[in-house]
Amino acid sequence: MPPAATAAGPRRVLPDLETYPGAGVATTRKWLLVFNCTNIGLANCMQLQAPELEVESVDFGRFQKDFGGYKRRLADFDLILTAPHFVRNAKVDFASVGRVRTLPVPYFDAYHPDLCYLDGSAGEVVKGVMGDYHSKLITAAWKKGIPRRQVRGLFDPRRYEDFGYFERWEPAKQRLLAGFDDAGLDTGRYFRGWSLRRPFMHSVNHPAIDVVSDIARSVLDCEGVPTVPGALVPHDNLMNGPIFPVYDEIAEPLGVPGSYQFKLPTQYRCIGLQAFIDASYDLLESRSRKEVQPHKMHRASLERVLEAL
Image (cartoon, rainbow, N blue to C red; front, top):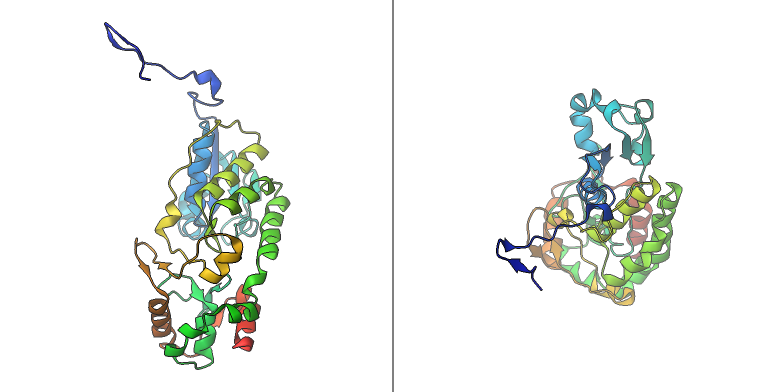
């Protein structure tokens, strides 16, 4: 029902600012968030939930590239929030310039056990049609000399079982929650809700925005920052990046929708499995097999795929 009108026009109903801690007051806390590409969503969620906060965010690489612009300002922040491995980085030891809270980079591979990173001969990340993301199965097939025309038939649930793709849920869950527990953050209360709705990860390290919002609230709770009840959830900026599908056969036992549609980075366009295979082979065939190696975190799992083919 609209507000009652008077002779002077519609009556404006103003919110009671006393109801919302921090609303309508000047910013009293200034935080710096140095994180992976989740940094934008995290900062947006924190500011929506805690209006008294001003959160400046930047990703790891940009921070190091633009360090000169940050160096003089680091002591001005009430809190520096970053990943454990980045507290002491090539540019600065954050602990020496201000108060620091660590936050683990979310990593969960149960939806995307076939995803891997590849390194080139100089240690650089090999980029393909899906940005940093590649397929273990496609990479293993190429390394074994299997022609691309035969690769589509390898995407089979019987092989997925041999690769260990159906074994990832519990280990991935324990790793994810243990990382937050080690940082003193209670995210376990949210996990069941994340897993009931839909795949809560766009890839192994890109959580959906509602997950990011819950992580933000855990940080605010731990820091004793008053939050707005029922705060809005911002747009999911990671939807603009690559989105790796949850393969149909992997999705089914997890109770979520599956597909073989690979959403391309910076585009709202998907390609199918055969197109992904072809694009991957085009890239890999331009390099030597010795030159391209799995990133260290994926060496053991890729070796299992190689052995099972």
